[in-house]
Length: 517
Image (cartoon, helix red, strand yellow):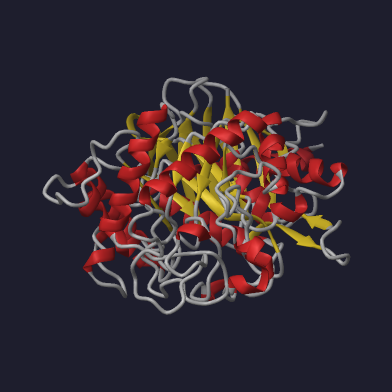
């Protein structure tokens, strides 16, 4: 008996010692940051095929992406995306090989050569619009990579050697606006889907000028973007269309702040679109627009100190002009060398943790109100949340989930539209504040949110290979946090792993979401 008492005493002392050495993460309820709009992904390329697969396969994929339900054990069935990006096609699919675009990335167009509309187009993508709505996705965004081929200068949906100007005939801006209005109204009439947002350009500042067979796309100068937005604005006002017109889905954060491998005509976008001094491009008071700029987080995630620095510069510039920011697209690129670049699909936590670190920096230092991954489904490349395969020319296929999917869900499933982010301050066991303690890029990164139903959410990333003791402090509120963990352990995909009063150990190479209702 005495030996048992000694053993228990040692264990108790060890436990108390571990807790005492924990860093304490204080949620500063008097320091609110940005409101959170949504988390999303796109139907880019894959859904036009997958949306025609057998219903059971579609439902499994839709559950993974959109469901906010749990099974009998409290396990989330999906990641609960709250915005779904729909690619409004330009008509390269109808052109076949003459489109000069590879077959897998062509898209159909509702508008036909004779000026009529064919509402049997883009059926696979539209099927997933409906599946998303059935599962409660509250927001939809239509984005265009190119205007319809009937209005382009070269009759194609890709650039063919011109410079960095828009592939749109000068007298066709109003026609594009009419097409956009008709397409949005038509989808709502036929499918019951209302688009909250429309973005008519995508990566217009890409220095490659969209030359080549990879996909639909067009460059555009700031003046051309402003002209197109104004034309669509006039059309929406005339037809009383309530869809918000968004811009500009920049390819690189550096193009928002200055120039990057292009000239001034496609740079300084925040100033160009939101400074009243930019008389030719100012869009701040344009009907149907918001003081929001959209951009993609490609190319700016390494080296690590730079990832934070440019987002802080972005945040400060946005504040100066009174503009909000949405990060609307990311996948892994060649310069993401820490995880081997974009080639070869990776279902493991290696890529998932890398992306979680980017999300953390975009939300905490860029103050992004919305965050979207690029493709919901992809092939043997790090661009899809779900891996898709087929051996019968895409009539059917196989879908495989990934740790990236579920790690994204550590954010998207629990941080709901209208949530507010709050600053997190960290102290050590001696109550000394640790500067920037909420962000250790190779260790622990923590962010905190309050939903509109008053529930609190904390997302904790442990990038390291060691367990990490963590204590949460939420002033004025007592209760237990329910923990949901994603890790390389089989079955740990947003898995509920118990409750805590605020003290726990973060497992190595994991992402844990804490929820207090």
